[in-house]
Image (tube, rainbow, N blue to C red; front, top):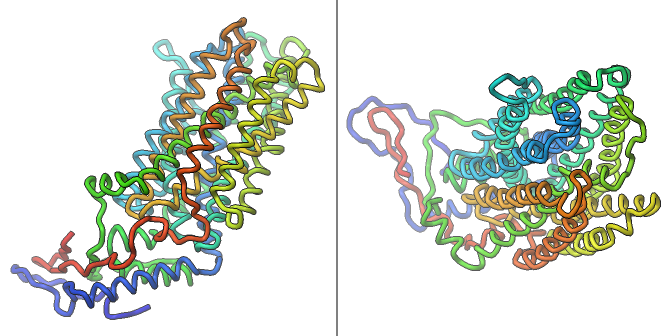
Length: 561
């Protein structure tokens, strides 16, 4: 890959005057053309690369983060029931307490996605990758060892820790999406990104499985516990949440040592020579090397600024893509988190798996049944949906899958909402309701839950890719917050507390948002089979106009920005 534009090694000089480094081109049409061609050749090498162990490493390193994210987010669905037994009034958290522990993480997600999305475009994907995982690890451990005192309740402490954890989880979305898309070959980019995101389903499943294991492990202690204090249920929720930091600890080293993406080096740092070297090393050995003494040649290429951002997205052909991504994710998360964080409540309301036992035996059986119910929902709906998307996303395309998913979800939620009373008047019909619930989970993942993650990681220029993905993801978490607050405030309208009288109407509201998602999907381009540069809506002819001035001043390398 060597050429006359490769990094040159120079000795630092101690002269006090300014000196230009000899032999480096300063611009001009020939230089611009050669750098432009070199950039295209380097990008083509990434786009046409054969699937390798390096791609597997990227998938696993990014995917473990999503496993941890999903585990930590959805474990609270079961843990909140445990918290109610230990710290709640009459063995239940108040609606405000339940809302607080469930909504704190999505609110943190929103801030984390905006912050880390922007930082990844400013300081680099590599520099931020791992920072968000450290936040998740510390805050997860903090939840597991939380206590209470005269001045503060344990629920308040948990809300604070879950908000901080949410910031870290939020940062994982744009970073993992952009890193996996920028390293992927064009023909397999959709499958690689979907495989990363599919770890979310296993994280959800693992949370329910760990819950079942710890509840079963403490069966005798729970049954013989004091019904007032239920000390051993306290052990259960702490283990359930605390174990969520284990996969993050395992993945941390690999995140901190992953290479910077060549597209960031080339298009944001504008260092074409280093990017070319990185591509060759990463694709052959999976390793990379940055010479600290190498002369850096900054290409004269479009640079991210506030004015340039506004100019780019004020054009309708660009702005509509960001709008379509953001609203589609918002609409989807209304239902995805509305169901995902409240599945235990919905299963309890319909009486599916409720325990008829009393006392501490009833406590054990209720926790066990909630865990089993969530396992069924994950195994029957969530996980299969991810992997059907994986099989079809690079052949059928992102846009058709998202459209089909929103259409099917609209139909399913209409049936579940308007037929709620009929579906829950006997045990056979309750099984039909659970089947529809699983079907909704399936078409969320074989549908917009996957594609709303994939498309924003592809459809924007490199210098704004992470920022735009963060905006779209934050819109989704705004939907999650709206759904969670709405669910908590609306579920008991028109009936006694705890009976979920209004849940059928909440399902009807979900159907409306799925319908609106159909129309926002029409704003999106089909990204299948196109390079990231084609999808940027920017001409690649003359993308690089030349080379910036490179100098040494007083023995220090200085590069014009």
